[in-house]
Image (tube, rainbow, N blue to C red; front, side):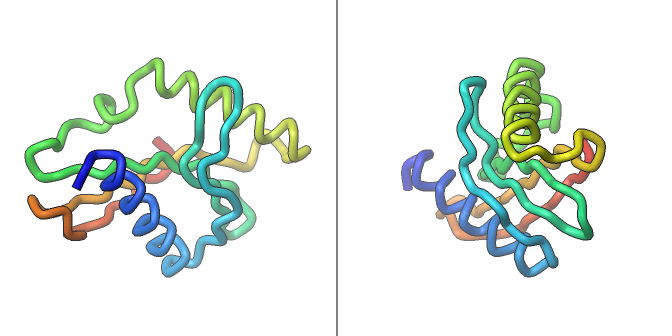
Length: 117
């Protein structure tokens, strides 16, 4: 399975997982001039901007390597763009990382949500 297809499948698994955990998925692949946010979801009145990373066991690394400083800056630009366009309060949101782990064949192995990164 190509990296692109694996990433797309990982985002589908992530969306399903979030729904099962009580999140309301509002948008997927929100694009702005600064980049893209994989999933925007809401739970208990709080917005969650979620970066999804799908990895095989041999591709694991630390979270700061998964979302380097330049990517964080792009995500923050998109978050601010979304909040402005939707007229949403700037104090009730967070950035989360959802890590989808797959086995060497690309089958779902584990999903972990790291909130407020």
